[in-house]
Image (tube, rainbow, N blue to C red; front, side, top):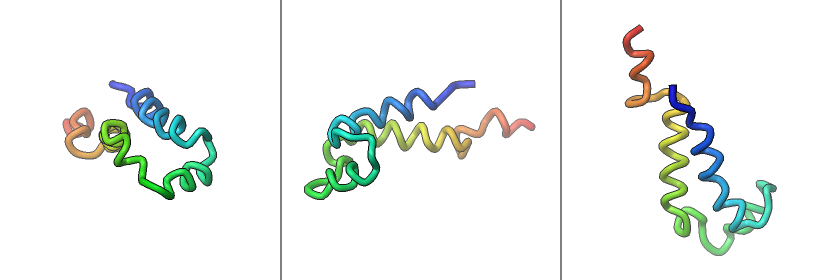
Length: 67
């Protein structure tokens, strides 16, 4: 099985770097001028794909489809 946690974690690094904090409140406040998805679309795409794969939704549920 492929581990998607590494991709999930690494896709959050640019957000932490832009906000200069790990605090969710400070990350939210840092986005008051512009959302980080506009600055880091590749990071968002990687996070979204890894999150969908982690919850084993279609098309990533093939190992369980045969059971």
